[in-house]
Image (cartoon, rainbow, N blue to C red):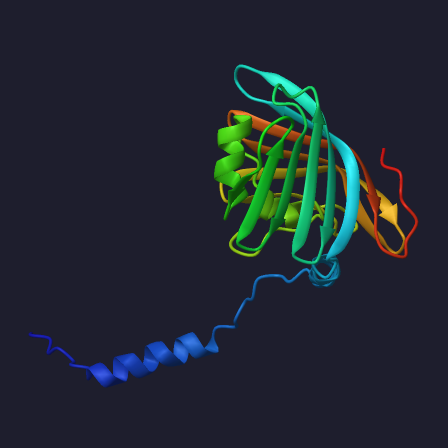
Length: 208
């Protein structure tokens, strides 16, 4: 005895598939509301100053310096001094214009600080992204592997090939800011430590 085949129209099959899909509940990724609020608050901070230490280590060398970073809107000044072979270095920047001055040398001008800093100092210093990283938030653009502490403080993330880790925070009014940051892209490791922050209208805080 032969069994006849039953032909189901394609449109019927598609309707069944769509109905099954529509009946499946949608599962959204969890949203860390407290972190999003914190990120907006930190992102809105556009004027600050901090003083601390910058320790640089790669596969063959290690050295350290003092660092002072002053930010006023889009304008910044970074001073490095201490045990660098190049001596004191001053970076004055604004969008599209950066001036780097080393002790005893004429100023050098560029549109972006990263390439010139590598040429002058011998290592990468991602100044553009550091503007955000030092406050405890990723820079605009893709980032991944975000890790949080119990109070929604960012503990670690990855961005543009760098691993950023926050090893300590300090209370600062109603907010907290990093006092120890490790920034790594093998074989280079940058440690910002003992950061002492000053914000407008708020007394200076003391890092750990």
